[in-house]
Image 1 (cartoon, rainbow, N blue to C red):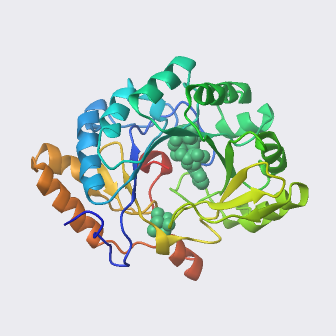
Image 2 (image 1 turned 90 degrees about the vertical axis):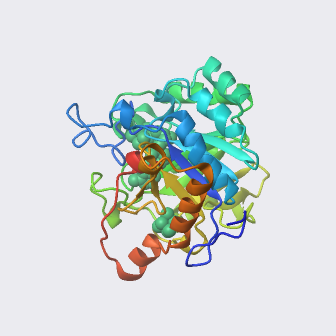
Length: 340
Ligand code: SAM
Ligand code: SF4
Ligand code: SF4
């Protein structure tokens, strides 16, 4: 299987690999790891079940050889895993990777850590922040984590040159929709790109209801009424966030409308869970156990690449489109486990 020719059953290539390095997190965001389900007795993965950094890099190499150019490290909270810079260095060394990023809640993004990650080869970071007032933000993260500390992490990332910084804001109707305009205003003109994300029905624990989703069209209308915006061309085919730019030159925002306007037809993304299970869709329930292939079956690099290619060639996922077409409820897996 040569680079770039690999396609799934719907003609989609593989371009983007999201790597979850842990299923643990120091936050309990209500839409992701609600405290009721992820309490003190929750069984997180034992250390030995996690892929090592070397094992992750082997899987990533197979994907890069099959056409992946974008790698994203996520979780759980990825900065909880020790010396993440070693993984970053391993991944940055793979020829063909042109974008190596990290999604984080920024709680552990100190000045030193940001610098170390940058010098290990990290290109940029995406920081999650759902509101600018502590009351709303703490009600969402559910661990009393203040906004100021996330903003400090963001400044550290900026100072280290991990830019352009994207800021993920998940919108839950009635919870933080009043923060849309303040967030847009705050980051307008800073060069940071806020991405307004529709609350998704990942997993079972967040009690998702369609009524909780504020449609992306409403978000665009709200922002446009205060700070006029116009659509901008995608940076590349299959870009998940729709780009909008401020008409006054104050930069751009992204809108991720996975619920109301699914983009499955262009989805070129694979996900590797912390224990080495490969998922070809965020909503997949059945993954492919690559850890077993690496540790027990001891596949060579070439065999691993062929194995991954054959999984991708059999892929026909389009969960969000099916959900929209039929309003059906399909089985699915938790976001903190598979990696957002
Ligand atoms: N802990 C890191 C963080 O929060 O940035 C990385 C992992 S988190 C699962 C990755 C992204 O998924 C975050 O930006 C988070 O806001 C988003 N996310 C989690 N649950 C979501 C949901 N139900 N709908 C939409 N986005 C969600
Ligand atoms: Fe943790 Fe990120 Fe999920 Fe919040 S969204 S609970 S920070 S993994
Ligand atoms: Fe891709 Fe699955 Fe999301 Fe569709 S539902 S865009 S196939 S991850």
